[in-house]
Image (cartoon, rainbow, N blue to C red):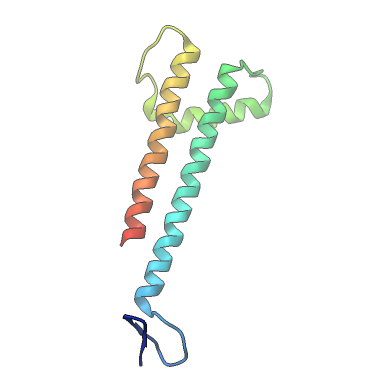
Length: 117
């Protein structure tokens, strides 16, 4: 059944609901885009927290500090030694900062493509 609203036609399945398979697929893509964005935010947040702990010289004998640094080190692993700088703190901040930015940018591009489709 077709209903007219303004200048556009809306398709309805007879019980007042709009859409169908296409609408459901788009909604699923939007949900997936949000999940990807949230995961990238968590990843980038863990890396940034690791940077802060290194810059502030957090106590590495603390279990929580070591856990956060291990996670950040793992996530930023592909970017290790991208820049070899004299100051270790600056090197960690730059290399891990680039890692966090790349995760956010890649997730943003993927989310945008999912929303567009």
